[in-house]
Image 1 (cartoon, chains in turn blue, cyan):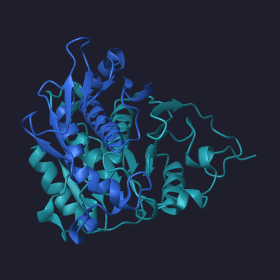
Image 2: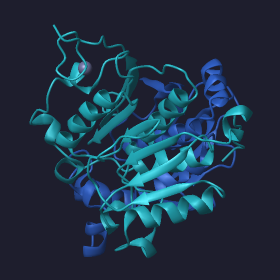
Image 3: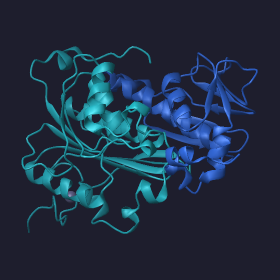
Image 4: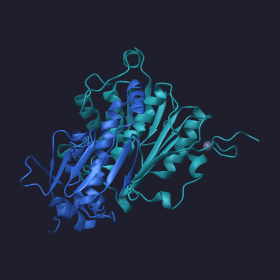
Length: 144
Length: 228
Ligand SMILES: [Zn+2]
């Protein structure tokens, strides 16, 4: 798959990023992701993936990647593809302080955008097949 | 998006603090949207650019129909849709204001010389500043309380060639500015609420790490150091 002129223009900042490039962007454009309803920060995650060029599909059958909240260790364990991303519990004390100062909306945007980045990097092969993330707003780290 | 809870006293305050957001790009979009949604301040958004198609992957306030329009007008229209009642004033210029007559200034630009000039102006006017930057897979957010916490020059001293790399040259992962912008919005909301947020926060997606770091104000800082 080769990028056409419109795609090259739209994704110019991805094409010039050494971790993506034109082949990586073509791969993203060829990826179909299903995101289950109960995935945390779903709205921002879906926007982040779609704006990166990934197609969001409504059924699991045609998807090449699946993102779902795990039933095993709620809240915030996300499985996708053959891997698993554990987004861990939030730091609720900090989240509550942020809520009190009117900034709670930032937590969801942060997590959704962060998951979108990690999933894009996983699609591009920059993550091992299985890894977990521990997220304490506004910090996270990967555990492999 | 789950319901947003806002501290009552803050959002019902009759006179809301005025906040200047410079830059309506990858950082400015989430900052202005998130602050508008929680109704903690009146916003003044300044930027002289028009929306380009290459902006769309990371500047989520804009769509195809906005390409070619002034960013400030397109952003303000979208924010008023998302947060009815939010006050967003626009300035179609990208320059240091003559007077920093604001409760807080937020730097969402990608011009490193401008960042240092704005830092110095905020210190001189004793106005709190939230500064941030992204390129490639890395980003940072810095909360500056003049005279109390480290400023941009305490941390980085002066612009370097490495810092002059922009998303235009080195690229950027599309959702990354929204991560950094959310942290900047949280820093801004906490500053307005009278809290003292962590001074510096940085992220490296290559290492899958983000963390706060503590920086001391430098007595010999040319912007905020004490005169000897
Ligand atoms: Zn300083």
